[in-house]
Length: 407
Image (cartoon, rainbow, N blue to C red; front, side, top):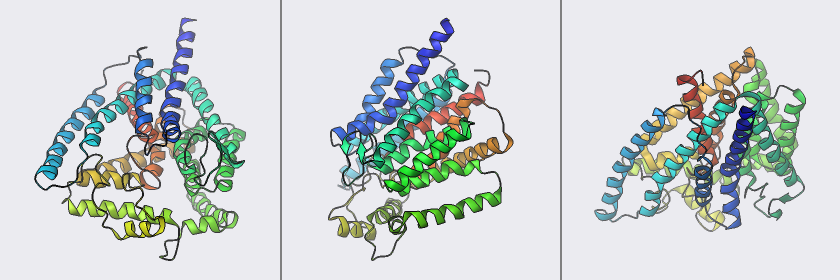
């Protein structure tokens, strides 16, 4: 009975933490018309700190200590770089954002470590129930968008979905949980419900990012190589045939196109290249992207369409911001993530092909790491949002799985 009460408490705690880090940042951003998730993330971290007065002890986390020590060294190096830029070369620097970077990353790591511990203790059916509850709520929120409603009322031009200000943000929020749901739930009707529901949202609300998310979530489930090729072909035909001009236009990169989404994407790639070149591989420094004067061709194209410069602070893609701000180190970080991505993809594909039985938190952690690819290379942005948090949760879970196999 005591154990049952303890598990129930952990299930409630894990649900609160998932809700806090997934829904509070976009909710606060939209309600107060903010430009980023940072303020909402701070609230989520505070909620986590309060809740985790109920300690979940496994063992001392040496990985956490190593990451923090490396961050301290990196921060000190870039402090020297930014001081040099400001006081010797007279360039624009935002020291407030720089000083805020380390405490927020520390908070993300600390809270993700604690949630990873809870996931490990819950295991199997308890963890699956928790994630399914949250996934069903996200799906219902998405289905409401088909009828033109979000948590804030009727639609506007940005197409807010559930608590997210844009449907692409909703895609990033649901992606990791959708991938896990397809692997963790064995019933075909449940999988069919998940896929069909999100497809309907993607087509009716019109979101390329959401369709890409579904594609990535389903892809590891396909065993045969030829079936994978067939799935890619069918996906393209399906989108072109049923999606109409909207989705075809989203793929256009012609100069005559008025589709600013692609120009913003190319702007992010260009910004990364220019920052890498102009800083001789050092990078602009943490949270400094967007403070230099726009000089790229695609920035000017975006300006000609929008009338102002947009997405210059986050690059609109994860890897753009990392490389712009950390230079060669950012390229190394992206390479390390790609190695993790391939390992997670291979694990999920093998898991499905060979019907391997494993702990639910291992499946969940690989889903978090694998689906972060969409945030990193398709539609991403800043560091302080749910996707980085769940990436860290996934990494800590796998670390614990390797060093504490009996936990």
